[in-house]
Amino acid sequence: MKSRAKQGIDSQARPVTGYESGDGQRSRSVRRRSRRRIRKKRFYFFLVGILAVAAFFAFFFTDILLPIRINELADKDGKKSGGNDMSDRDWQLLLVNSSHPLDKDYSVRLKTVQNNHQVDERIAGFVTDMIEDADSDGVSLLICSSYRSVSRQQELFDDEVNKYVSAGRSMDEALAEAAYGVAVPGYSEHNTGLALDIVSPDYQILDSGFENTDAFQWLSENAYKYGFVLRYLKDKTDITKIKYEPWHYRFVGSEHAEKIKEAGICLEEYLEKYPK
Ligand SMILES: [Zn+2]
Image 1 (cartoon, rainbow, N blue to C red):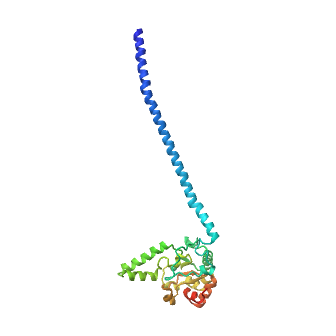
Image 2 (cartoon, rainbow, N blue to C red; image 1 turned 135 degrees about the vertical axis):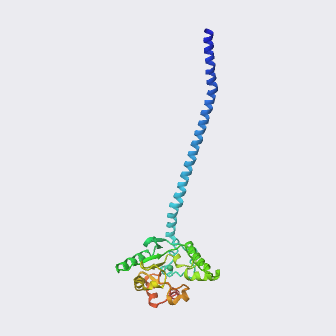
Image 3 (cartoon, protein in one colour; image 1 turned 180 degrees about the vertical axis):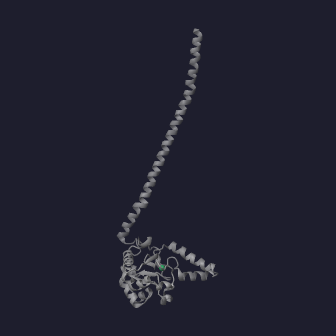
């Protein structure tokens, strides 16, 4: 009994020892592994945290601080907006046509006016006043085109070229004909933020029929007061190289607009008549 009991104890003891020694090592290594796993996890969390903080700072500096800084610098030396380092006469009479491309560095500060249309912020007030005053006279003016980036201009121009190519023109013919209706990218007044295409809610087709609307009538009589001139006149297409467009208005400032309107000339002629 004793010995069995002893054996029993021994036999029990051994497996216990065996259990403790074999599984004990295993559980220690399991614990080590899980500690390692936890450490690894912590390291990954730490790494993700660092990356998140870095991403936040990158965003903060490039999207928030940098533009503020650039604007501050621009305000200081007046170079941010293409016109801001120019005199009023210079930016108001900026000539952009088929032989005068817009400077590649020209940048413009935009402001939203009617229906999310954007214009050079310096003319936004005049645009809004003009639309409101027309409205009080019972005439609705609808902007259908305003500032256009050069890349958007490229899309429009390409579409126009494709239209002529599909109609059977050679590429040279298509390019020439397209340029008469849609300015070559970088050569459009719409790239400056100083030009607007204005129609009437009742007549939104861009053709000479716009002449017969109240909107055109009102613009012909009043646009100059807000600094706008009809830019592509019927009898000046040989100078402007752009077809007659009764809907395209260009801001030149009220002083110049009045003189241009009175003389019945286009911007190119005005600049020749009144050089700096
Ligand atoms: Zn236009």
